[in-house]
Amino acid sequence: MIYELATDNIAFPNPRFASRDGLLAYGGDLSVKRLLSAYSHGIFPWYSEGEPILWWSPDPRMVLFPQNFRCSDSLRRTIKRGRYEVRIDTCFECVMRECASVPREGQCGTWITEDMVKAYVALHNEGHAHSFETFYDGRLVGGLYGVAVGGVFCGESMFHIMRDASKVAFARLVEFCKMNDIRMIDAQQETEHLASLGARPIPRLQFLDEIGKTDSHPRRDTKWASHSVVLLLGGNEGDREKTLGDARRLINEEVGAIASLSVVCESAPWGFDASQWFLNQAIVAETELPPEEVLRKVLDIEQRLGRKRIPQDENQDKATYASRPIDIDIIFYDSQIVDTLTLKIPHPLMHLRRFVLKPLSQVCPNFVHPLLRKSIIQLEEECTDTNEVRFLNCRNGHDDGCSEK
Image (cartoon, rainbow, N blue to C red; front, top):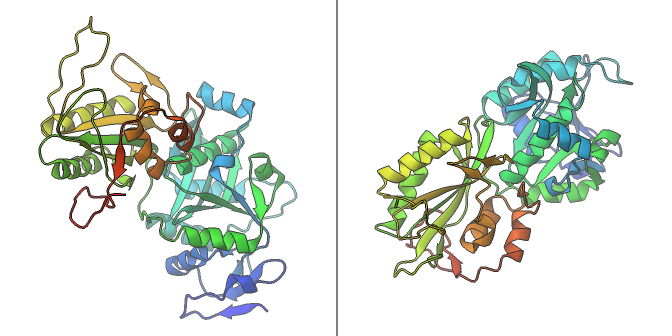
């Protein structure tokens, strides 16, 4: 049975009642509220000019779990050469219009109508739809767009006018998903191209169950920045909870919006003895700043919050560890590898420290270390550090009402 939607009610029938080919309903409109209701229930619009709006929930559903992404050696070389630059959410409408206009084999015309463009631009302006854009010498040559609902990115379309440009954008999307704990990429319809990248069809019921599991994922109704930086906060002097909160506030204001954060953990001092244990927390912030500028910002924040760094003796073999009110380490910056006199990313000791890996396993468990080629989960399982780390059942660092586990 195909249902007719009322214009004054954004509710959808249960997608389990869709027809064999996936068609569930027709009619309604493309308002932001209706589109969000559709995507949060595994439904999407797909129709041609002159048709009523058609709403679909196909069975099976093509999906990619980010940890299963297959990056070919040639694509990895292309990314490493830096031929292309990938930006996020800088020209959403342009990406949509390119997706609509680029000719596709076996396809006459486009389903991306002017009404669809207006509707998804409205979604984008309210922070729900996003684009990953590939540039070559400052010119847009590839990209993709989609809708984020909870822990799922619902891909809509992609295009390229230069070799591998859309694949580079897709690889950046996968990297972003891993760093921001987005658990699934909905590719909707099965294609050989998506299968080659690691996507696979799953039954509709399984897909709907997966959508349901991500309902508790925090929704970020903002445009996404071009880079994700993972920071580890820690400190054991003074008012630990207040200092941690002040650090989060300043990072959010001066580095970039905090997209996700771990539960606060308490850990024994690492590398030295102290009576007071550390509070630690991992956060993912979205930023437009380059790595060296992020470093300058976090060092300034540390200083403002009372951190006094001990000068390092150039003849000293090992770093000097001591109590401090706050320490902000840059753990990852996208999947970039930075090796300068002042900055090394990924953090060279992060895989040896359980107080780093334990909170990281909450915010980006499937992110792959760009040098060690292992996920955070794998690194935590293999870590031999025996220092005690315990979580507090809260994210703000306060002990009131929080129990240890």
